[in-house]
Every structure is written in structure tokens, then in C-alpha cells.
Length: 204
Image 1: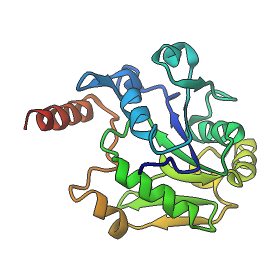
Image 2: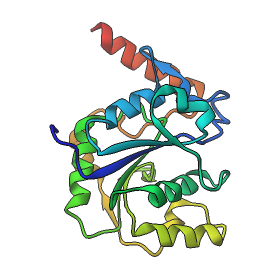
Image 3: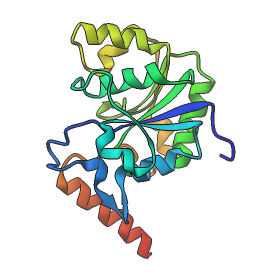
Image 4: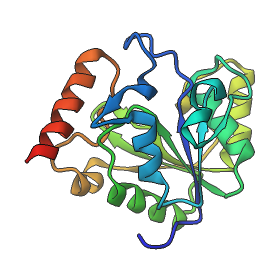
């Protein structure tokens, strides 16, 4: 992983965090905010890191921040913004609330996309596809914008006209024997679990 992949990295941080009660992108684990942890993980792997979210919340953190083109559209709107501004054909899009992601897994995902003829690559768990840790080619933008115009804001609807390659559990599990890779932080209990995991790991 010495040379960055020819991929742009985007972190979606424009959500309301309604179940958490506070902006979860700014919540800290081991002294660093979730957003900062995610950006630092991405930085050596991609050509550029961009945060999609309100600049007034994040600009002071030192990362490139852009607002959603059309706020209020949820993650699909954030992906549309990312693909519009990207300078790379392939783009890694991450939610800001995935503390268990690892560099080796993201590097594998990017290299898999670069070798694929699909328009998007999504890992799949028992819950279904994981679209906020996924690769999107700029070719997806037209389909996503068409879905937004129809007010179809589910990411899977946005990809309805795209060729989507699924990465099954049997493949990504090699990077995550504990099954935590895509576990996100939606509620305070999730945050406490992540803090206990990483802060306990730091003392071992």
C-alpha cells in the first residue's frame, strides 16, 4: 500500500445523527474524532480525501470539505455530489460512522474495482449491500441523478441503471474474522462498544 490507488476518497458526514443525539462525526475514540480517524485511514490509500458535509462543522479540521449540492437528500445526495466533483473515474465512498474499517480491506476493495468492468462494487452482509463502504464509478452519476429527480432516494434505487458487482461475505471476511467491519455507530450504545473495543485494544 505504498502508492495511492488512482481513486478519490469521499467521507459522507452530512447526516442528522438523530438516533445518536449529537454529531457522530465529531465523537471521539482514543482521542480522535470519527471523521478524523476515517480521513487518516483513507489518506495513504487514495489520491485525495474530501468530506461531503457542512463546511462550518468540519473545515477547521484541516480536510477538504464540500457541502452537499442539494442538502436533505441523504446519502444518495452525498454520493451524487462526490461523483460530480471527482477528478477520478473510480471513487471510494464511506460513511463517517464506520470505526472498524481497516486499510487492507479498503485497499483490496479499491484494487478489485480497478480491475472490474462494473459501475459499482458493494460488499454484502446478512443485512444486504453496504453502500456506504463501496466503490462508485463516475458512470453512476446519471442513474443517481435520475433517481433523485424521481424522489427515489435509496442508494439501491440510484444504482438501478448501473452494473453492480457484489462482494460476498466469503471474500470480505478474510479481512474481518470478528464480523465487525461494517458495524456502524447509530446509537450511544454503539459508541460505547466502539470506545471499549479500541481503548481496550490500546492497553493490551
